[in-house]
Amino acid sequence: MIRFILNDKEITTSLPAGTALLDFIRYHKNLNGTKIGCREGDCGACTILAGEMVGDKLVYKSATSCLMALGNAHGKHIVTIEGVNIQQLNFIQEAFAIEGATQCGFCTPGFIMSLVGFCVKHSTQDGLTALDAVSGNICRCTGYKSIERAVAMVADKMAHCGEEDAIGYAVANNILPAYFATIQPILLNYQLQQRSSVPVNTGAQKFLGGGTDLFVQQHDAMHDADISLLFDKTHLNGIHQSGTACWMGASVTVTDMLESSVFRKHFPNLVQYLRLVSSTPIRNMATIAGNFVNASPIGDLTVFFLALDAQLVLSDGISTRELPLRQFYKGYKTLDKLPGEHIEKIWFELPAAGALFNFEKVCKRTHLDIASVNTAISIQHNNDVIQQAGLSAGGVGPVPLFLRQTSLFLQGKKVTEAMVEQAIEIAQSEISPISDVRGTAVYKRFLLSQLLRAHFISLFTALDAGKLVKV
Image 1 (tube, rainbow, N blue to C red):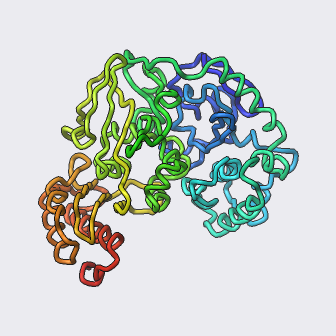
Image 2: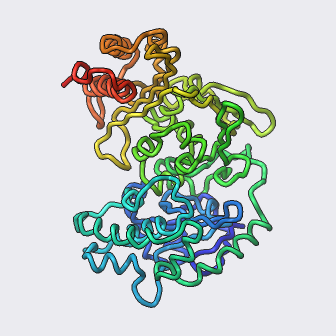
Image 3: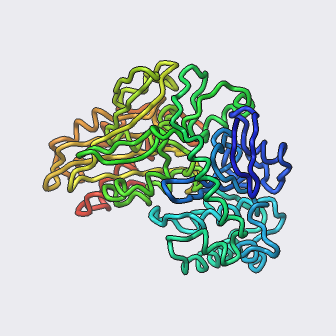
């Protein structure tokens, strides 16, 4: 039995766990303010909030309900546009009305919910702005300047909020209805009754994390699929440092990375990198292990962690084995993973003091888009002499690539413009891009060359960029 709070009502349902939450909201509860748009997480029309207890704090995050399994709502507070209505317009709705930031109105509920998510998030440590909060919302008819002005009004309002009680502040300032103050005790009671220490069902046909790709590919099949829900398993969550290594549960999300003190300490440009990964609602749902297992040749997180030589701990529910991520891909969409196995943990050695890291990505639009080519590099050096390097690339082969020969070439080399050009030549010999909707093979080769130059220009400022940039 699935149990959660939907707006201000407690819900129990025996519907299959793989039912899309969007379908439950609209077709079973007749809450039609949450719209059906692309069903791929691209338009943001179906955005809702999901609130859950994290320790002793109630934390809300936006999510695209078309990609969220009903089973992943278990034990949470799910909020639709109807659930943020008060007697008059709430502050965000009023800001949109004042600025004329809506026309046909189809997209407006999603924008409102994304901004409510910005207002009630407990932590500001992710470094993201109010505009970042709506990076996954698309409007087809209004034009974005009026929306940006409305967003600015909301950001200015929240600038006066202390981080410790964002929910209380939102209730007091007509952003949320008063019933939000009653939610935490109910969720605490849920937590006492049922938390997710249940063993993983390794006999299931499918493992489901955040669902951000599986529901795109198999929406209809997921409804009746035999699935094992991994997203909220306690032992599959959390990020911590042990010695010089960083350990993560398989269900850690991109947002978890953004909010992690371990990642923020060792990757100073983390926000810059992860802003390029999808949108806020998707980052709130997409898991690291899901990105790995999806085996997309252009998986952003896969490319990120290939450069860091991440190690996977695979489990079949009885025994575990460890495997380097660099050995996980055997061919296009083919993994070194048995049907009953799932990724349980991921770990990697944290960059040492003075080590360098960079991530680059080119896609047709800045946010919420699949890369044409992406690449990451990790370097340890001494006086500009590279001691160890890990270079990865996506979009230039049938699998996410660790560029082994190029990485070996870099070791022991002093960083010069000529050395960078030599490394690019070797990288070109390791890739085999194809022409598709994201660009021709020639274009992708050119992109990778340019991005490799961008790595070194960013990391070694003494280089003469003019000698490296090719047009």
